[in-house]
Image (cartoon, rainbow, N blue to C red; front, top):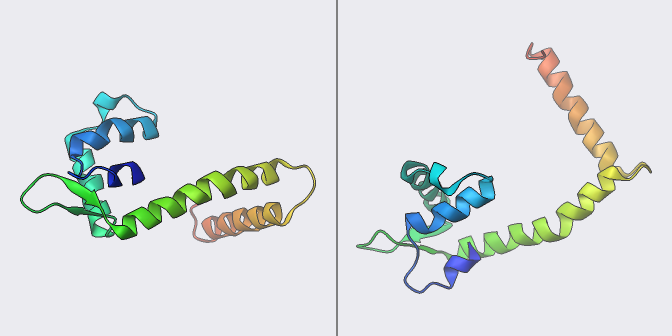
Length: 116
């Protein structure tokens, strides 16, 4: 999303289709206009983008830019470290938390009769 902040005229639905398909790991032709409209509507609802009046173009809001920067930082800094920590054979707090979280989900699904 930060790259779209640099476009003074905003961006269109079709501008996001190829990028969205790449992120989803699918062929760009499989992402429909309707799917993109839905995604854009959700982004607008959360205040991450806004529609440019009297056009079909959108622009990233200040909230959207700061949110994208935060998510990028988490992805780049914390995710690789956390995944490496989970693979470490030595017990760690993150691994213990993951085990407790999974146990709680298993207990809840069993209690509610959702277990397979």
